[in-house]
Each structure stands twice: as structure tokens, then as C-alpha cells.
Image: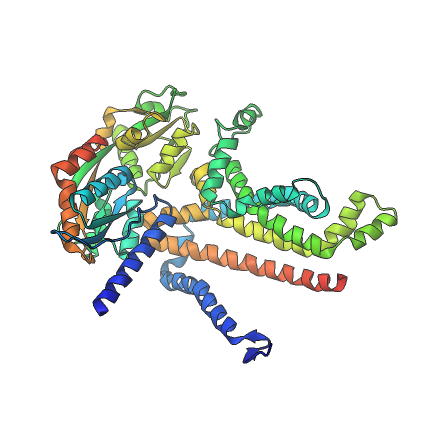
Amino acid sequence: MTQIRKLALLVVGAALVAGLAACSSATPATSTSPKGTAAPKLTGSITVYGAASLTATFTELATEFEAANPGVTVQTAFNGSSVLVTQIQGGAPADVFASADTANMTKLMTANLVTDTPVDFATNVLEIAVPTGNPARITTFADLAKPGVKTVVCAPAVPCGAATLAIETATGVKLTPVSEETAVTGVLSKVQTGEADAGLVYVTDVKGAAGKVVGITFPESSKAVNTYPIAALKASANPKTAAAFVAFVTSSAGQKVLAAAGFGKP
Amino acid sequence: MKRTATLAGVPRWVAVIALAGAIFILLPLVAVINRVDWPQFIPLISSESSVAALLLSLRTAVASTVLCIVFGVPIAIVLARTTFAGQRFVRSLVLLPLVLPPVVGGIALLYTFGRRGLLGQTFDVLGIPIAFSTTAVVLAQTFVAIPFLILSLEGALRTAGTRYEAVAATLGARPTTVLFRVTIPLVLPALISGAILSFARALGEFGATLTFAGSLQGVTRTLPLEIYLRLETNPDAAVALSLVLVAVAVFVVGLAYRASAVPTARARVAS
């Protein structure tokens, strides 16, 4: 009896947190009612917290994982990696965490909230995004620093901004952005709407917004490669399924989805 | 109906629910105060970026409040004193920013004043760059804050009635004279409290600013945006700045209460 009650509480808690996470900006979590009918190997519901840049791929991976494991429900919540870390440290009932950089995963490891050593499952590099038509005629990274060019980047505090800063340092090109956004999605929308002449986003963001922005690769991007680690969390009520999801992301099937979205191999 | 156990006419269960609700509102405030790193409080809130954000917030909120008064007062007067076809529809549209998520407001502003927006070209020609400027912040804040002024003033105008205005008119005062000598003084407390509420709303603006204006220290990064950014790297600073914003907001709301305490008394005398 008490166990059932505990489970019910957990489910309610998870729904609440997922709802709150959705409120706090990101994509609304796909809410599905947990169905524990036919029980093969894996059962129950898990909640995956993923970096904002993983929104499209992890939504797809969750659906594929559910299809491969009938009876399993995967709920997803996406936000900036550091926001998610703050939520997990605050007791959010996440089972799996996928970060856009190692720094944020390290925070959770230091707090002793991660089960095993996190696995690197993807890499991502920056790319210049310009509005269709490329009004400012950007071709190289140095063009972004030209006077009169409205460049938008991420703030150094967030992973994409840290990568931008690393490239600036490595190349000696000093950017004077008109805005330092709090999330990569902010940069992308400023470019999409034509407010900015250019922005620095991830390769995968350009691919995801194909048709609305044009991507310009630049060789200096190799100076800052973001590595994405994933790990199951200690607080998970369903450690078996959580571990299986981590394994699925790093499997060849999972890697195929990530590669199709433009992610690099770890 | 016979009332049992009441507190000055208020059923006890209402008071109990009210208490629970008050705790719900106050507890997060206590939690923030509890999390503040007091020894580091002053250094945290006096860093260059914090001060820049606070000053920008105060500056833009004052400018927005002025715009709210300039445009909100005439809107409230027209809504309260005139009748025209589709008035209800217009009122609900004017109050739309109140219910819209600020992000939606930001998107709407982007497509209006943005470089590729409806009026973007016009402003470019006039030499007023809006994108990524402090002007954009003020526009976003005005957009979300103006309904507060309109609502509070329109209500006061209706409560005050038109008797004094009618008397002034029969004594030969022109409409503009009546407006400045009778109407405005009559609803001044509501105007002040409405303006203060608008100021408070402008001060807290986040979503529309982030979407429409961007985020750059000293130009567009207001205090709420700074807090959100600090949460990424330095949660202690975010908490300290939150408390600063809470303190300013409490102060402002207190002012609004004091101002709005007067009109109820007056309204009673008038009616």
C-alpha cells in the first residue's frame, strides 16, 4: 500500500516538475500517462533532462526507445544545461541527464548525484548562421567583427558562449556583439527574424533551422569542440530503464539519429 | 441565513484559506532571504555588471512609466467616458498584454518594430535604430505595463462618475479645462497607483525584453536578465540580485498601496 502511495507521489512530483520545467521556458515535456501493463524486461516511466540543443534528437530518441521497449514511457524536459543542473540539485526527479558540456556534468558528479562515470555521446561545433540572403555578406569568422555588422552571440556564461570566447581567444578576432543571449535558441531566433546580420550557433542548430537560416562553416570552429556527456542519476526510481536509455543513446541506433542531426562522434 | 463562528463577518474557513494562500506567497520570499550569502551580499550586488543592470532597469522602467502615462491616460479616459461601436472589443484588445505570455509580446513587437517588421523600415529611415537598443527595452516594458495603468485609471474614472465634470461644463469650462481641473485631480490617486504598478511591472519585465531587445550589459541587459544569466554561473549572485529586485518591488508596491488608500475614501465621499 505505502509503496503504491509512494509511487503515486513520485509520478505526481515528476509531472509537477516537468510542468514547471516547461513553464521556465524550454519545450513542453511530452506528457504521457504511464502504462504498466505487459511487462517484458523494462517497465515504468523515466524522465530525461536534456540540454536545449538536444531537443529534436532526444525527442526522437525517446520515441524510438519507447517503440523498442513497450511499456516504457520516456518523458523529456529540455533547457539550458546549467538550469537543468540547478533543478536536479534542487531535487527534480530526473532519471537521466544529458549535458551540452562537461563542466555542467562535472557539477553533478561533484555533488555525487551521478551513478557511473558519464559517457560522452556526441560533439558539436559552432557555425556562423546568417539570415537568408546573407545581407551583410559574411564569409569568414573575421567578417563578424567588421564595423556595422550586427553579430549576436551567446553570453560567456553559457556553453555556446564559452566556445565563442575560446575561438575569439584562439584567433585573436575580438567580436563586439550587439547582444549576448542567455541561450543558443535566442541567437538563432535573432538571426531567423533578420534582426541580426549573423550569429554563432551550433552546427546542429543551423541544420534544425534549414531554410530559415544559412550556415557558414569556418575552420576556426575546431578550436572549440563541445563534448556532450550523458549519465543515469542516483536519485532514479527506475535505474534499470535509466541505464538502458543511456546505453541506447550510445548504441549505433542512437548514434545514427545524432549523426543525422549534425552531431559529431565523441 | 444564520452565520456561525465569524471573524468580523468573515467565515473562519475563508480566513484559514487566506492564511494558507498568504503563506504560499510569502514562503518563497523567505526561502530567497534564507539562501542569501550575507557576508558576500554587498560585493555580489555591487559588481560592475550588477550595478549596470540595476541602473538600466531603473532608467528604462521610469521611461516606460512616462510612456504608459502619456498613452494610457487618454486610453483610459476614452474607454471610461465615451461610447462607440466595438468598445468592448477594443478594451479587451488593449488589455491583451496583461494575459499574453511576455514572450509572445516580444515576438509581436519583433514583427512590428524589428528590422524586417511592419514599422522597422520606417524607424530605420527616421534614423532611430530599435533593434538591440535601450529603446527596444523601453518599448517591451511599456507594452506589458500599460494595461495596469489603464485598468486602474478606468475603474477610478467610472467610480468617480461624471457629476463634477457636468457641473464644471455647465459653468462654462471647456473640455480640456475640465480634464485638467476636475477629472485628473479627482482620479489622481488612482493615476499614481496605476503608474507605480506599471513601473513595478516594467521593472520585472523579462520575456518580452529577452525576445525583442536582446541582452547586452549596460544597453539591454536589465536586472531580471542579469539574474537569469547569473543563475548559469553564479547562483549566489543571482539570489542576491533577486533580493534587490524583491526589495525594490516591495517598496514600490507599498507606495502603490498608500496612493490607492486615498481614492476609496474619496469615492465614498463622492457617492
